[in-house]
Length: 220
Image (cartoon, rainbow, N blue to C red; front, top):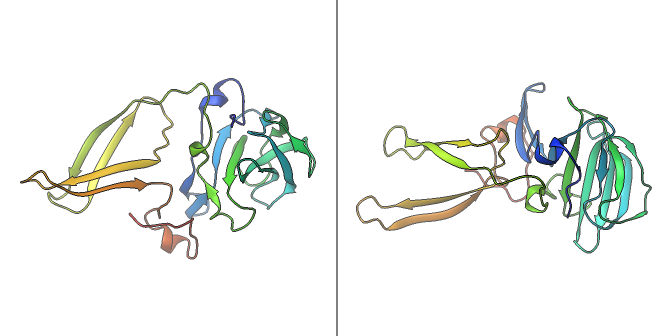
């Protein structure tokens, strides 16, 4: 798969990652089902792989003008939201890299950007969505250096551990954290697990948005 926006700084910036996020204007958490890639108005948006146009139009007031493409060889769909204009038609066959529309700010949005999604099915939205960063090759981007600057329990021996991470660039999309717990006296590993940050409830999310759930979530 290719990156849906080409050229310039847009190839290395994500203004909003996948997953739960706080919407200050609405006063509650919302599930952000894709990634936001900021770009100037009418920047070309490219289809990430060969496919067929499944749907073109306004999916909802929030999504604005959108194009959804089905990729038979991959077995899932990609969605391109908030477009200023669409340059393809339903059932049209597409080749990887073809321009499918121009970036805009249609629908509910505060800035000019392309909202991009991976959908495993054409229904059960948003539970069918997955983090696009697990599928895309991101151009012009090096893996950022990260450093744990604080790791402590308050009070000591608390079940809650605070972790502060610093990174070499502004945007950092942490997807998974490997956690190992050792016995202080023997050094034996008593717990070893990978925590997937894309499949969890954000703190307070259940009460803030009753009924919302991503696919197979679990609380941390």
